[in-house]
Amino acid sequence: ETGVTQTPRHLVMGMTNKKSLKCEQHLGHNAMYWYKQSAKKPLELMFVYSLEERVENNSVPSRFSPECPNSSHLFLHLHTLQPEDSALYLCASSPILGGSSYEQYFGPGTRLTVT
Amino acid sequence: DQQVKQNSPSLSVQEGRISILNCDYTNSMFDYFLWYKKYPAEGPTFLISISSIKDKNEDGRFTVFLNKSAKHLSLHIVPSQPGDSAVYFCAASDIQGAQKLVFGQGTRLTINP
Image 1 (cartoon, rainbow over the protein chains, first blue to last red):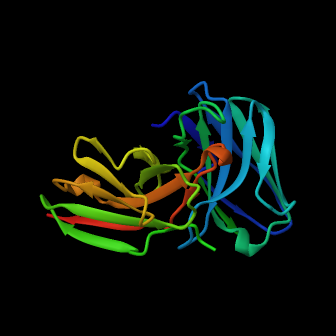
Image 2 (cartoon, helix red, strand yellow):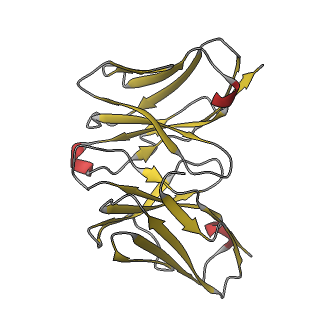
């Protein structure tokens, strides 16, 4: 248990559906991240939020829309996804962006399948 | 262009022996390196890290070595235990990247009893 939870753990959706992934951290951290892990590829950083402001968008298609209402919660809204978007989506948090600690704490991930 | 590479997708080691996992990087601006461990159905968990001002960091059975001139780091686990079987990711960051971690593809370590 890392203090970062993600729901749902598994999600199957059609290409015309709209769904949201949720992440919650109980660590008092101020920075939160979304990563994508596709089969046999490294973790790819998608978005970074610091103090609820988006500070990084790593050229992610607009069909992925993040939301950070407060420092404990992070959402990833999904719409009109493609089958190639099927992957493991991981949320992470860290104490503060730009601080001395580079460690990030990951949630268990949401396994997304787009049909 | 992959900046962090783990060239061995898998490694099998006998219980009690030393496991050595390798990682190479190309970006000379990286100044902090981390190893993460991942079990199936769980997210990666932080294992050990090293700053570029050091060449070795040790934590119990785990030691990370950094060779800046070769842009190479390695993770040594000794003695290896069955519970060490997992996928290991190395990651790198630079202070200008503000903790943006760049990950390798991972190495699946299997410890045989």
